[in-house]
Image (cartoon, rainbow, N blue to C red):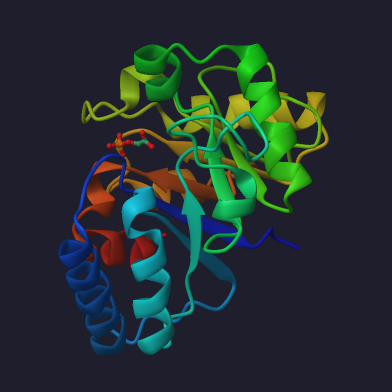
Length: 224
Ligand code: PGA
């Protein structure tokens, strides 16, 4: 049986609370208008920390069958770690957390060792990590069930990997680790999503730029 599809919207460092509310409202309206069913798939939205609480509240009011992810997690437990948001706090609003995105590695100096600690914290607090790898050789920490393969050259460039190559990476990663889902990320659009979703070892997509517009994200869901 085919895996439940995961379609993840990564808003990165975008959207105020007002913009979050508008996105959810427009998404809900678009979903109803187009009669897009969300059965057999899981939609996960990753807003910035500042919008998580309100996003969850609005989704509840709109009766939207979507889930939430944080985009990062502290490698530490609660306590004297100024500026850090820990797993216990995230768990109040989200069930998932994105860990190891290449932007975190590149712009914030996150190392494999730190990412292992973040994964351990996520698991400790009952969050499901969505662990990003840049290629088939990126180490995947223990306990990971969902991996997102995102080649840095494909992120935000309009230059996606080929579905065949992404599928080959997914096969190798599934052979090597005990994981249930491999997602593809990097310049996914409504036009190319089906070519990735048709690949037997790809179980979903992680969408950045195209998820900022609710109608574009809906198109991705529709075509997936
Ligand atoms: P993109 O980003 O869809 O804008 O390429 C994907 C990601 O970084 O998660």
